[in-house]
Length: 476
Image: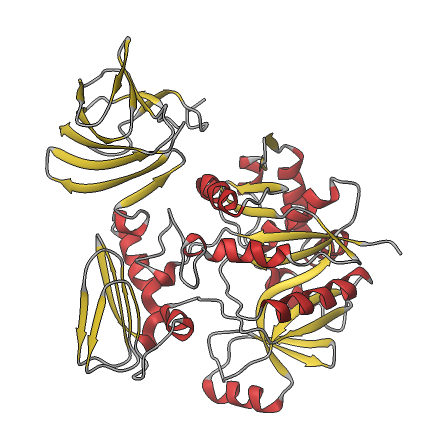
């Protein structure tokens, strides 16, 4: 018997605005550790690793994500010792339908027509065995040519999810997020399931359905794919062409139009699923004390019930509060009603309108070479703690408006300063004058940490002129 070829696809391009201030555009929720010991993205990849059996041949996962997160993807896969089949980089978000189309076009390049198992990178599952069994059943249906969606068996009336109405294994209807009374009726009927946004189908079946219902998206994606570029595992569709692709979700573009027209089926999933779409959902999956309080980090809770406290850098104390969320980061604190946690996105939108940096970056910013933490700043100075990974280096660069002092805290630094290259070790320092070409590298086997003191009239991150860069960040 021929094995069924399976191509896992992990959708990792979300922004997670409702989990601000922990989730930000530069480091969104799928790369955070919110449940367990690994990130949501890593959990999604690891869950799909268990699919292969005597009847299924499972390829390395294809990741679809944003250009700016490409090194986060590789770093987190490296921690799992997982090698991607490809990392498809969208130059801009165009919702899930174009993202899946890129994955389908990539899969068809092999000359095969594998079954795509499309999973989101920002969901949790507590019963891995049940998840794997449900996906294998879904793959079997998809191998017959069906479009198969995963429907979550609801354990409560939920107004934050869309629903699937099933007639046995057939999908009868997709319905929008209901009000509470309607959700209660759905759950009581036993015929409605939460729409998890996970689906399984052959690559050719997806392209045929898209051609039928949204030929504009299909043709625009093909145009972008035709001029793609490849750099190792990174695959980039044509930027101008992809920006012309209409933005649409999988559900609106195809799924909701399929019942009664195409063969669309549902596989029920009862595996402790949660999409962690808001802080309320994080509270649900976090262990709680006898009063329903959940906390992460250095937190103290007194005379309070059903609260969530998430502390990242200092002690956070809560007294006499019920049903609230408190999230602390080094540069921002959120206090919200659990009931209103979906509305955190309103704050993020306001930050965007005011062009505040807290919308995009944390105080500690991850870079492909390591990270930097902005520990102090004033009108004409800024102090950063910088870590450079073993064997990594920053770009060869210069600044028009600032000079820099570097003090090595630990490790060994190779410093290019103009036409000189020097080695510095713990407690040694150097000075980079304004306008001087320079580079910081770690030639050692242990992380390099330095303190950088910047001084000058302008200290923004955009005052960097790069001449050489390992990570492709030099403007062409």
